[in-house]
Image (cartoon, rainbow over all chains, first blue to last red; front, side, top):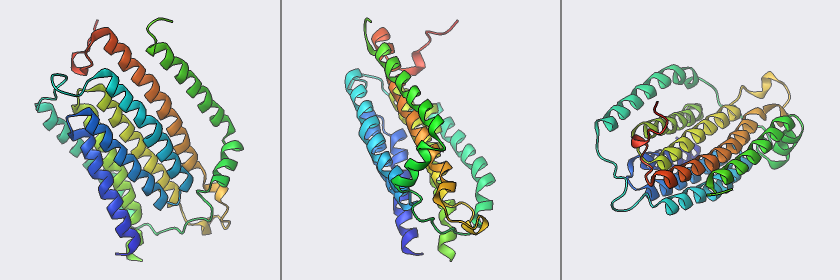
Length: 167
Length: 116
């Protein structure tokens, strides 16, 4: 039980608890705040995986941009609060939980055992650094990168089209 | 080293757990915004799994060079998943806003506009 494992355990516990909070809270605002905590913890998990640039991107893109978008839409729609969209305790919560447990068992039993015996690979120097990611992104992955930018452009145009009352 | 062997299954378990919580959330919740949050949860779980596999790749002795450029595919995949997730959220929340304007109600259990 070394320091690395303890650090990982704390982060993993926080990530799991906040992930449960996203589903379990009835109020959409509380779910969103749990999701912020989850994404932040996930960024630190990326740091522990030596992917520094992606951890920072996670904080900027997810906890910064996407969660603000979520909170804005919750504010505009007034779906949280008294008298609106109550989540009732139903049979489907039980069935959904059962379905999740079954899926967890099925996937875990298939993938976990081969990796229990795997050896720990030492990290490659500069694997998550901005220089190496930029070099790969603009040379070998330049074509998918351009495709992603076109996709984002279409997303911008589409969301404006959907959100405007009259063009 | 006993402890370090358990890190790879540990990260995979966190990813799997978050993915399953997202699936359950999509099944049981009725608020479409929370359903979108659960989809984000699933995408992030997959990102974590990609990064885990990219970090704990087979040891560099197999390739006899420790050039980081040959291990970049996992991180590139995460970058593109983030881009697609951002586009998806923008369009999806726009659709929710449009439906809310049409129906004044966003309960997914009562949406049957497409029913034949």
